[in-house]
Image (tube, one colour):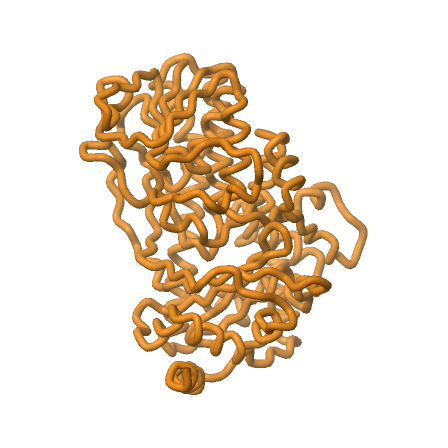
Length: 452
């Protein structure tokens, strides 16, 4: 079969590799003028107007890393050679390793380098044609039209156009977006010579909640890392964090961000990058058009705080490759693919909705109980589990399995022994405040802006 892939981001390139390596041909059309480049550092000079979040933090969750190993081991080797870093969470286990622990590994790499490696692999694949600098203007009877009047004909059209926009008349499943409830203010840093990533009691990288906003950190490739402030959409005062000076003042007031962002430890390599207008969107019902297959964010988009994007793009690509190896008609392929990926995507969409709603409630000042499964369960199963995981191997495995997409959400939810352990550990934890109260932080930010 011939596949026409609309969109040459991570999902589109991975889908192209998957179907080409299953024995089919594919043409990948991308609106931005991007080409396969030799040097990894060239990845950061690419202009991606079609992807507003291109420079924002991304990571391969354990499931994403596992799928990439299966789907394109050459790509993961290229990334590691170029400076991507693996983090073996199983190293925190106190007891002996068990089967499956080898998958408890994150792959940390910045989004531009991911696309760079995938595009190089796609360009070298005999069954793939890459078309760049062409916009898709609308669907055709069998394929789609380009802005130069050309029609790309195919047996199957893959919608890898992401969550933001699609051409007029483009068939997509009806969906009702649900706002994530937060704006993200991110800044990237590079470690100074001799400095190392901060370590501590947390399971992965430093993260925390101040009761009115939160923060998270992501490692990147080549000794880089990102720090993100997650601010309620309704809190207009804290939007001052879009200013570099205000952002740094806030980082100095929060532990351990004060250490991570200090001049002795690291230097900023980007300005503050705000990201808003985020919504959870479920289109897993499909468009109803046989031979039109959505992948990545075009199928289901969730709050970026959960970092599902890269991993699900690969999961969907792999599922498309499996379906293309078995089914010979576009209708059968579409049906089999949606049946394969739909249930998991819907479960994760529901999980994101529930967790976002609980987080928004907590940030509004409403008391929430994280200490018990009978309290605010979404935050108990997320924040309390993360805090408890370093202290119990079963909790660690289950927690990483859940947030890393290795296990279904339901496996965690039905484990009463796990819940007992989390409740017991949480009750004995000392939880010092990570930062100042909201009004104090606002005064700190305002003072910095005035004095500057």
